[in-house]
Amino acid sequence: MEENAPRKPDSHGDAEEGWTKVSRKTTSKKGNLHNGDSDITSLYVSNVPVGIRKGELWKLFKPFGKVIDVYIPNKKNNASSFFCFIKFTDIVDATAFEQSLPSLNIRNNLLSVNLSKYPRKMMD
Image 1 (cartoon, rainbow, N blue to C red):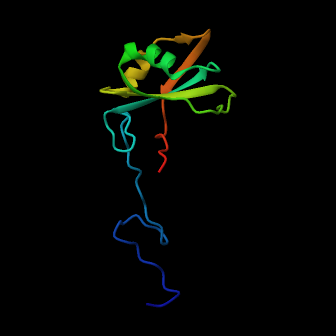
Image 2: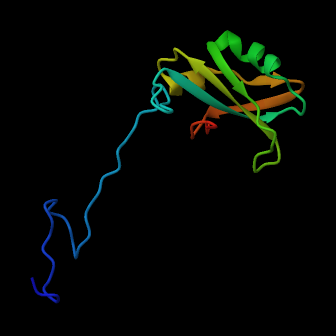
Image 3: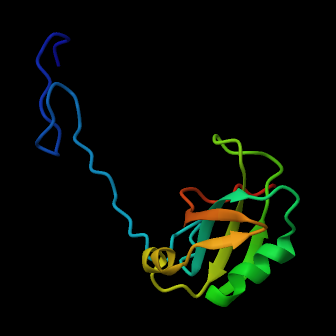
């Protein structure tokens, strides 16, 4: 093959000048898949009061499903508030679950609750 010869499209057909068209794999938020655990739903909770204990958050979220983990990092988010992650199991539709949660207050703080975007980094 000549060095200056024009490239032929690859087997994907839509390739232009050596570029290959790729498609992004779409995922559903049902089950909020993290590390392959389709039955684990993780919530990101912000505006958490200073000095809150896991047990307090566990009690607050227990009426909404089976809580399996509460993680409170020792740092603040970009809005300079503390945050935590609450993991639930046996949630069928995570989006509907997120929307069904009422406004939650603890220690006079209104919590902001959303589905977490990323899985928790596990230590080796």
